[in-house]
Picture 1 (cartoon, rainbow, N blue to C red):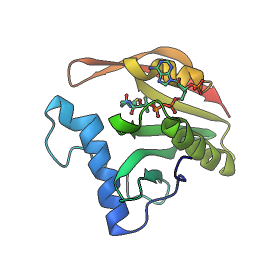
Picture 2 (spheres, helix red, strand yellow):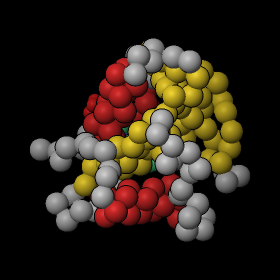
Picture 3 (tube, helix red, strand yellow):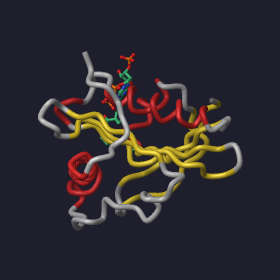
Picture 4 (spheres, protein in one colour):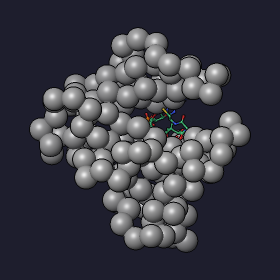
Length: 147
Ligand SMILES: CC(C)(COP(=O)(O)OP(=O)(O)OC[C@H]1O[C@@H](n2cnc3c(N)ncnc32)[C@H](O)[C@@H]1OP(=O)(O)O)[C@@H](O)C(=O)NCCC(=O)NCCS
């Protein structure tokens, strides 16, 4: 059974959360420590999700915020390589979507890395258009789902 998805609260939760973001989304592209933080992470509107292993290390993370009237945006989805393909990403995304619905938002958008597009399609998202290229090498696609 998967460990539950929850909101990180303690300092050790937050350390595990950012460690996984760094390891999966920044370190492989030689980005400096600290680059895994976003300016709006600490705003009250930004809602974070974390799944941890029994030893406290992060298995999955993600966040959602209100991007526009009626619209949620998911960012920084990451699952530890050892835990990928076991439903952790689905659990994190569904937890974030539940928060968006709780807020009364009616659609969710995200900018997906090319290799993650099939995952989001499986979860009901459709490609709207190509978007930016990150670190000069990772094409992204704007995707959208009605909530
Ligand atoms: C993309 C990512 C978040 C998906 O998380 P995950 O835990 O591996 O995915 P899950 O096991 O929850 O998969 C959910 C469903 O999507 C499917 N899926 C996942 N990745 C897929 C892929 N690359 N191609 C096709 N289907 C895929 C699974 O088969 C599963 O389908 P099922 O419910 O029918 O079994 C994770 O692999 C990851 O962190 N990748 C590296 C970082 C990244 O790209 N992050 C996204 C940035 S936009």
